[in-house]
Image (cartoon, rainbow, N blue to C red; front, side, top):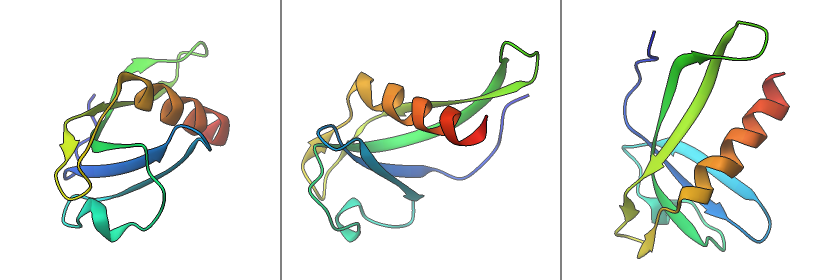
Length: 88
């Protein structure tokens, strides 16, 4: 089962590990901060965790034109680790 939601965007700072996820209708530049990377993301719920429960997994892609920043494969790793720590 895949979670259906409208396009979401994110900004992240790799030095502080802080990030913000927000609706795609907003510009990246609306989120004030010292960001190192930015892009779009989607939530995938097709996997399972070690308990057999539906697992939430984030994938990041693209870039922010307004901030002139690109996404990075590490972005998804940081966000997924934070979400797992919060949810479980």
